[in-house]
Each structure stands twice: as C-alpha cells, then as structure tokens.
Image (cartoon, rainbow, N blue to C red; front, side):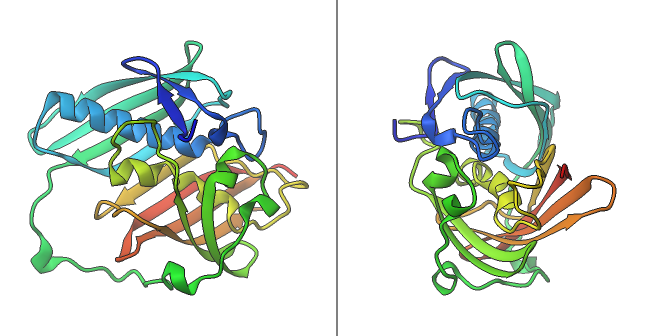
Length: 256
C-alpha cells in the first residue's frame, strides 16, 4: 500500500511497511505516528466546530515502541474555549498507550501587518545537495523520504525533507499533519555518533508553530547536543519553502 497508514475503522489505522523504524525495522518509526495523532486532533476538531482553529503547539510524549500493526487513537478536549483549546490525543496498540499528544489550538486571525521573525533563513531545497538517508539508517520510513542535506559538522546541519506518500490512504490530510509526520526525522539527520555504536532515541518531541506549514519541502536547521550524563537534545528551527515557521525540540536518552 502506497501510504503510511490505512484507515480500518472510525479511530483505528493499520500501519504499512513504509513506517518501518530506523532503530528496529520491525517497529514503527514514530514520525508517521505523530502525524497520525495530529490528524486525529484536527478530525475531532472539525467534527465539533467549523471555525478552523489551528495547531500552534504539539507536545508528544513517547511512552514505548510500536509494532508495524493496527493502532487506535482517542481524543479528549481538556480545556474547551471559543478561541483557544487544549486537546489531548493518545495512540495505542493492543490497549497500551504508546504516544500521548497535548496540543494547543488557536483561532486564526489576520496579523499580516505585524508578521515577522528574527529567525535566520536557510538555503532553499534547490541549493542543498541530495542525500540518501538509507546509507545511515534502515527501515521503510527513511527509504520513503526525499532528503537534501548540507552538513557543517557532526550534530550540525541544514536539511530538507519531503515524501510522496500520503499519511493515510485515500484521505485528505492538512499541511500541518503532513509536516508533523516528518518532524521526528530531525534526530537522525545529523548524528553526533555512529548509531551502530551509540543509541540516542528521543523520548519526546515538542513543536511550536507560528504559521501553518505550507505544502512541499519541510526544512530543518538542526543542532544535536550530548551531555556527559546520558542526556541529549536535538533542536531545530523549522522552515517551509517560504521561510521559518517554528521550532522543534527532542529529549534524547544517550546509550553507548
């Protein structure tokens, strides 16, 4: 199936071979699953209201690994509001929660007259060389991604990512959910250490967006830090082809 997930019920989805993980190819790469939860939040929003609140912050806790199998989503409104909502979504396999998302949704309004950012632009995708991520990482997800990367040093790079595969087969998905399905690739695109010698999976991911991602390439300006006590941090400024759109952070557990 040429998609990351296939809907099997109102709140259930079957993962395909294209979600195969990088640390273990029998497990899901968590990136598409994060996009699936963002889509679940937006689907629930649209079933409840018609004013198009936008996702401004997505904060994920990764509670465990996921097999390449059927998963289920749930969505709960924690803080309802006319212009701002806090929503929690969970992704489960076999009755066990494996990812939890807390998302702030906010009312869009015209702020073009005051729009701007001090975040520095990065070279566009046409100015960055192609890079084959499968030379470093196995798995169906990395194989499905088109990557362009300009690496300055281990743990420091600019890169662009896109995929030709839909998040969910035969289902419309927003630009934000599509981008969220790529966010987690950040931790593997400019490694500080050979992943065959040192493991450094992330236990969370938080994205702050000041404008919804536009369709096309998703850009990352990324730095990776390892501390001396087993902790690490991957930080990225996010871009679409029009410029910066937000930031991303992932807490790492570093395991030589």
